[in-house]
Length: 84
Image (cartoon, rainbow, N blue to C red; front, side):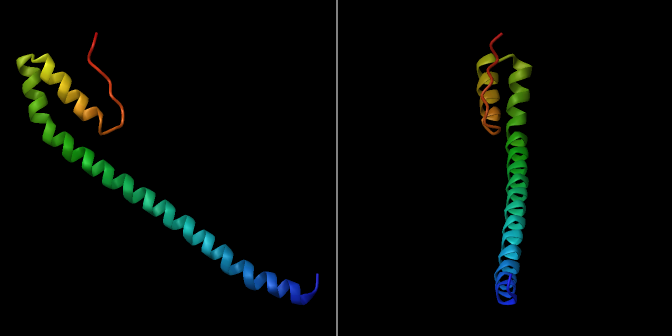
């Protein structure tokens, strides 16, 4: 390979490699930030639902308990029911 071609490949290759590495870093960082934000939102939502959930458990109100369980499970993307 000629020196001219090596220098051309090096001139284009290094910045391209650094750009790809930086983009990958930014994607990982964004993913972690979104995960942290989701965890915080879930904790706050559960904290808001917990008094109602405790009240429904104490009174034995199955319909209210089912509704609150359904609401809390939608934060995780699943929807289990209490049938059984």
